[in-house]
Length: 323
Ligand code: GDP
Image (cartoon, rainbow, N blue to C red; front, side, top):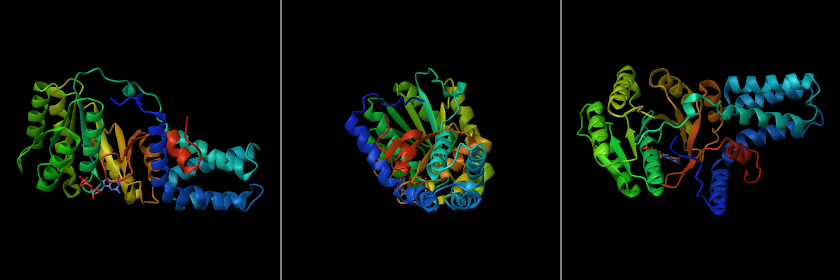
């Protein structure tokens, strides 16, 4: 990925981001960790009844069945081995499991691909926050002194194209926009030619998200991938799926659909501010095994945070700023 953990971030900026994330995750923390704590707080030891209560609590907290099973299996096993005796031991195991779910296994794919021009496709259902997120990403990359070109390839939504041009202007990015009804792959082709001619560093492509024409949409995305690959070596270098956290387990169903057809390389989970359903992050990571790259915690340009599993789990468990 282009973004290395920003080495030029000052300690003050890092601490500020951590505090903002903690604030945004407050409702999720209440729904998940505070409930776990209240189930455990009333007991001095862990017995079968406590384990059953804990299981029920995890299931209700938008973690989904697979994550709950994984956590409970680990706790039951360690309980049998006498490694978990107290409520604190159980809480520590939950924390450990949650962190390991979010920590992607190292793979060959995670190595940075050497290419002068990076091409990122952003996919997801309409309304999840795709356009806003592209604006935030463009601002972030421009802020690092790189040239960004945004390609408005959702050729069926005039409003999306308009909105994207506003975001592009705000974030200092260039824009290649389509005419309504144009073939998205043709727009992409033009955008990649423009990016090469203008020496851009990154092209971010906004794609359509009409779920009611699912098979057409998936074919369209597939065609765009092929066009990108023919124009730029290794492209698309990232296919980022935007998921709206407020949709809870529905977000997981969407992720499954896109995963089947478009080969997602990373997730962006939006609207974590003001929802109690942030547990969805664990569900999706556990099932699909793709890394969360960014999280959205608000509507303005700076409300996009590069995802760190440690910082996320620490802010849920009310711990200090991670080193
Ligand atoms: P698109 O249809 O997927 O392109 O979605 P938009 O980018 O138009 O976003 C839909 C709505 O979600 C807009 O009102 C955005 O301001 C809002 N939105 C996007 N990201 C976030 C976020 O991280 N937090 C909050 N609170 N709202 C967001």
